[in-house]
Image (cartoon, rainbow, N blue to C red; front, side, top):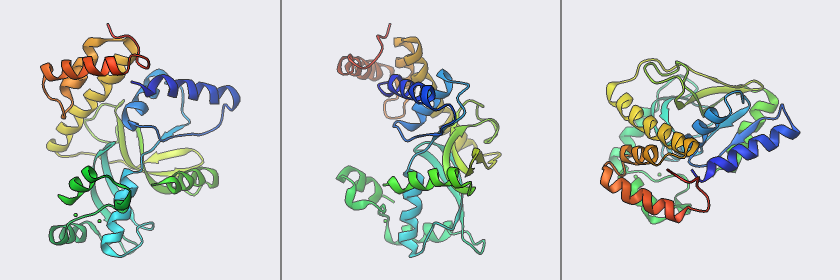
Length: 254
């Protein structure tokens, strides 16, 4: 809710000077900002929303297996910071996911940028045991040079993942070229994954609507749904403290 006003302003400023420019949005929280931009600027078709978490995981897997992952093809679906690799195919078409699972079960996992992470992140990664400005350059180059290289990006669902709302901002693999991302269809997913995603999507949507409408009720509903809170009484306490801490940045909630 702190980011939305500035992001809308930035997009409008860019458009005033360059109607055809691509805007590469790397702003956190990526999913909420992406959904908010889609709601506020529905006719804006040249914003590409990305996050480095999937590519960081890919590089981490490469470190585990001792191989270059830049030429592999991921099969991935989810929401931002809420996704799953189904397959990662190498140049010969072999799926590397079974090897990754076998390695981590035996040896644990550390991220590729472990030296940059604080201890809480490393503790989290230790439960499973292996930044990316260059990613921005690569994806910008893919648009400029029309390479149609595969990246994992955030786009409106529009039927990509069966059963998810069309306006959900999903994170999937896509071919990226001069015309932007061309997402690969995912189709049906399991009930477990869809249930988690629908809950997260509802939290993200209600957060954006709370910002757009200045609605205390929707902000409270959003936090109640958030899996880190999960309780309306706790959510109210958290929300009231957030409002006080962010009063200079948030719209007034009524």
